[in-house]
Amino acid sequence: MENFFLTGLIAAPFTPMNPDGTINLDMISSYADLLIEQGVSGAFICGTTGEGAAMSISEKKAVIEEWVHCSKGRLKIIAHIGGLCQSESIELAAHSVKAGVDAVAAMSPYFYKPLSAEDLTLFFIPVAAEANGIPFYYYHIPSMTGVDLPVYEILKVAEKMIPNFAGVKFTHSNMMELQQCMKISEERYEILFGSDEILLCGLSFGVTSAVGSTYNYMASIYLDLIEAFNSNDFTTARANQLFSVEVVEVLNRNGGPLSAGKAIMEMIGIDCGPCRLPIRKMTKAEKASLRQELLNIGFFEESKHEFVEAR
Picture 1: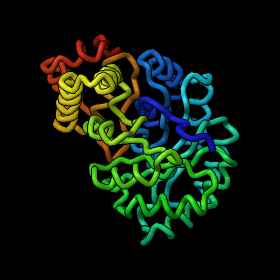
Picture 2 (picture 1 turned 135 degrees about the vertical axis):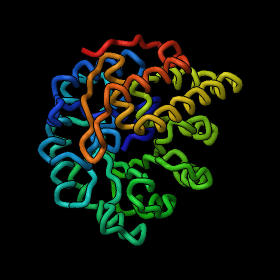
Picture 3 (picture 1 turned 60 degrees about the horizontal axis):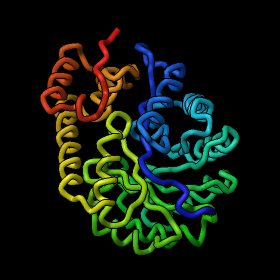
């Protein structure tokens, strides 16, 4: 396996949907172009932001194929293939390889939960094997799965049992555990940092790549943050991180990162439609309130996006 396969910012795209909730594959081409224009290096598709848990296996296959086709090698495509059913994950792994993705990832099963790092790794072994040698990442997101096994233990076990194990997408605020993972990983595995609002913390511990939903529409803020950090300009780095926190606060006050995030995408010209239930569709009044709060904090100026009136 090639070490440090992923670098920079990796967006976690929303899955574009039509008003009736069906997948809007036609929007993915423009979406991919936007990410490339913003300087994003990859797309982590069908994950939490992509509403993968609310999609059928056939829908995931179609979305995976379209992202690979539309990126034309300009983005690294990481397909999330995890779920409750091992055989479906195996099927998605095989399909992802055939479609031409660059890597796959899987979160833990979250109904029947593994009780140990060994149990989780045993679940992943045939899934990773079906990926035929491309990198396989464990997606650690205990806030959604309820599975908070020590990631450093998973690293130790997986390296012995999964030949194409590449690292972890670490979406957690436990900075002590992040340090433990970084120490074990050294130059063998990658830790893809998954908490946009504390990216600066991850950089200080040595992470070199990050996956996040706000990178879809404000990548410039984080690229400037990374540049400032690398130049030892911590005043600028902290200011950019604080602006990120302010945006996340606005999202949380206006329906949460998925529904508000999709509304922002519409505002900048990529209409991703509504979320699937049980995430309720935002009303026009709620979108107007979100827009005003974004204007109040200078979002469109800072993110270098122009507001696009909805059709």
